[in-house]
Image (cartoon, rainbow, N blue to C red):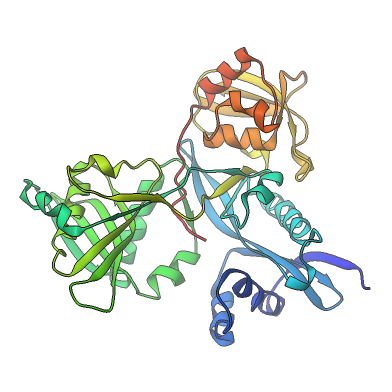
Length: 395
């Protein structure tokens, strides 16, 4: 048996390693996607770091990290979106994915990424690697006829529609503006181009008031029977209530064309309050994203409340984080530095939860993430208030 080696791969090695294993793992098969199309997609992606495990010439496992930015408490950080974490079925349950991911995280930290996020195939696997689960996005189902009362509102604006390829620059610009005010929101630098714009498979509805863009919706209409289509909006964003109601009015105008509406919404949306008698069915998305701090030293700058504490960070997967760190608010901005005397010990899961705003520090002891005193918990709550991160991207 040959020795297993793990290394970053490039060029044709990426094609051979990623051509069939990720589709086999995450899609129904057979058949597999067309080889030429898959190869073209992989060659077209930019800003992606690939790692693979080999035994001789055989590929055992892969992982990839895409170049993104993410708003965390008001500041945009470089973040790597992890995908393609796959092991060949003949080599599973032997720890290969874990080791490949550890190597990938080390490379990403070296390249300047303080954060990573992913969508898990199993949460407990990634939690052991330092990740914490975000809140679940929502998927809402309703009848378009339930929105007809919106058409009677006095809405001082209009909705314009075009195919996404024609409106992509407007769409992308709105997302970049929205990201500045949306905690947790992440954007790929490159992947969205091929997936959304170049495929040209969505309509873009733009809500405007006094010439300003106040909301947008990315949607399609699918179905076999006219009048019985499903209007599926995979993005539904607005800057104010007017933007929201303009978009809902646009949906209402499809009452004789669509019999069902599906809206993908951020975790903190409350659509049941939008209008009476909606009779909607609200469910959670299939998977919640997860995130983790990759490099404690790179967290400076985010907006935090008053306070300071020191903690010994426990992170066996990323040992460069294992030290005593001081976290201090200076004029409302987080400063991190090497500490000397620790106030408590925290796992990397606990720290990740604090910066993303997921868990109250009183929960840490029950999760095995640390046991800060009651007074120290108060400091942590003041510095890192609970929040509901919305990552936006799916990958």
